[in-house]
Length: 182
Image (cartoon, rainbow, N blue to C red; front, side, top):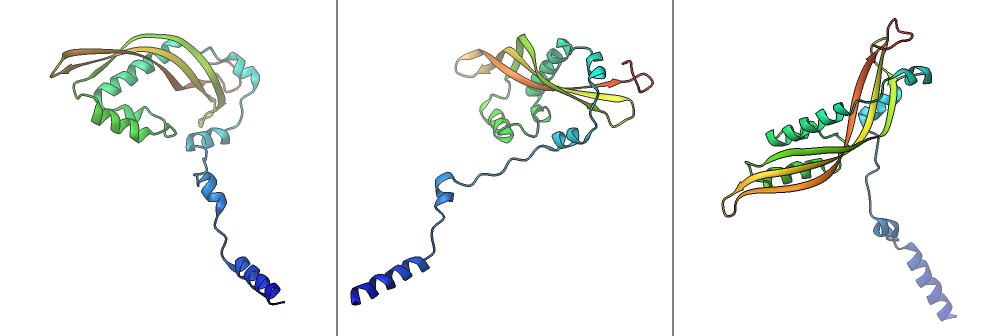
């Protein structure tokens, strides 16, 4: 009888102790991702009919090439942060690494841009009456070269190939607001 009472008492004590949060220890705590402000604004805009979408001209590859040149010039002048989207993964870490690990006189040159392709796009009504905004996500393979003077080894050229994913916004104006693009 004494043994049964001891087992019941120890069982009650064990049940009254706080239980550790095993679930948190197993998978950790992660921040819940939320859509960016830009995506929320785009979702609030009214949809554009398929007929109007069909009238839009295809994306000009020169737009992507111009954007890539602008990004390389921003890298050279220290203004790359302005071109990175707010949802860019480890944006601050990338900018810190560039400023601390890359020589100050380093220059990024774009040698070749190839394989430009549209990944996806969305079309929405603009804020002004009669305007349409097309946001395109474009991938491009870019051959680059970083050039700098090293005090020990002299002039250095470091070639590389990277894939850039760009978001390109185009604004179209409708003639009369109901058809025909400008």
